[in-house]
Image (tube, protein in one colour):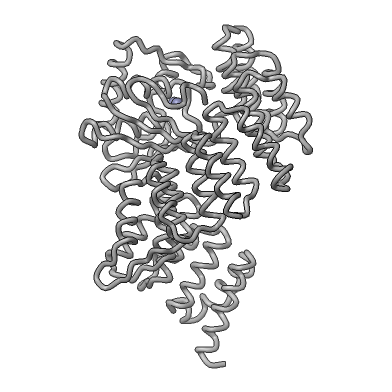
Length: 487
Ligand SMILES: [Zn+2]
Ligand SMILES: [Zn+2]
């Protein structure tokens, strides 16, 4: 067999492995054959390896190969930019894109669509806008890459996820071709902002244009309604799914309705819907019901919903946090003590660390709860100290409900002060000119203490601070939040 034939064979096999997710087979080809030949240093084979490892979920191995490559081309860069973006590693994806720029490699629709997606997952709005400019204007002989439905849909999604609904709408309206993914991106943008009326209007428009809608389209409408407290509209859409669109509501559609009913104070109806679901409610559904009990300050059903959630996901601490916050708000001290000791007995600790990102001057900075790895940590901590003093002077009392560890009060306050969203906000405040709005993205729900603190910080510092948490957008301005403390 000639060497070209060997090379072709390797790339075809590796490509087959990536399509079918056959990691073990792909690794065997790599280690037992390719590694023993000079093909390990061949660009085409290396690209095929990158693609195989990335698509089969071994992103770290792909990263390692990529970093050791002597020469990289457009294909290598595209594979890594897309792989990082798909895994939610926006910062890494943007880093590779910058390297691609530096090396002067050609970029195409795939590059742009992927890096725009990367911007949405780390809130890099400023950088995303620069990319938007690049895809609109032809530069140095490169032709303009719009119209392109994939790139434009990525832009709609990015603007939606970065809290700029008007820009998402502008891109969407200018699109000459839209597919169902584009419509769903637009609906999701409305959902993030809690714009129930707009989401419903876009859904009607999509239906009029004969777009194929799915349960995700309806999830967005239900979430949007849920965030704006529009129970009737949500219920109508829930019914419409079956009656007019022949769609069977998925678990998430039910959860949205449970959430909305519970938060509107109709806990009995929420409980009834849980019991009438065509499948057994999962842990998220029970936590949703519990979240509604907490918002309503209702103890009825709360303990049993928490127990159901614990049983389904024994290692998840979220139900403990919700229940302890409810007990604390309703003055149930004995129950609170009992709950904390039962949590200690079960050996539970917060498993997923809080992680927040903020973009400053086109660069994304990441913070983990209690983190001190940022080069400007000293300045950030000094700013937090100043803020804590100002907050206390303004009458702020830290709420320690969410801290479920067995700690002394001072330690709890210390831990609250170092929540990732607060680190990111403090960094944003010291790194930008006064008046510049801040956008922080957090992987978990913002805790009630940070929520209350950031509300006050927005007033003390006259800043608009937007926090996108796991659940929704919070736009803090002049001491209030757009969620109306309803989250
Ligand atoms: Zn917090
Ligand atoms: Zn809020």
